[in-house]
Length: 192
Image 1 (cartoon, rainbow, N blue to C red):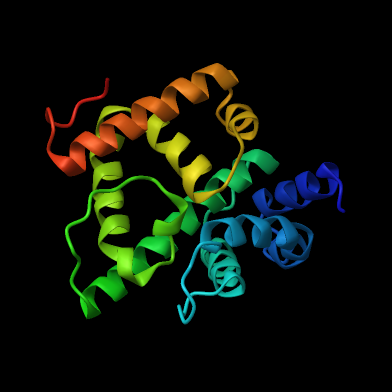
Image 2: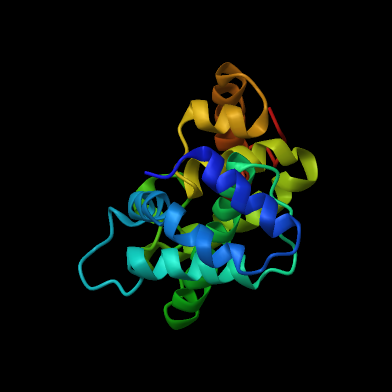
């Protein structure tokens, strides 16, 4: 398992303009990316087309194709990767929703919504609600991206955001409440 210093030095090389550093970085983070992608897609139904490996590779391509490589450290890199994974999953859901219009279910932030074509409408509603929440409290959106899309633990999320685990737990509850109200229409979209 590569050390954090190996990853950090490659991230520094990326910041300094060494585009080949991403190619050297990917093999070092592949196992962790794969584990997180597997968590996102673990509750899929048989026959679904988005595989763990495809999600990992799409995430890598999105990160490698970016013109901005200013990752502060390993945690920041994985936060950006979590956002990229969210965007890929939402794009996948949009494609599936275009093929089969949704059933109007409310979002639940349950892992089986990810990568499930039958629940594409739920993921799209979640993304739209996250865009609304971004305007009110960006840290709550980061919490959802890290926990739900990135698969980070409460402690990892706290480290990434520079807050306490208790704050992450509180933010997670606030974000879930907002997202539920936003999608279901109960009491209007406000941050509790």
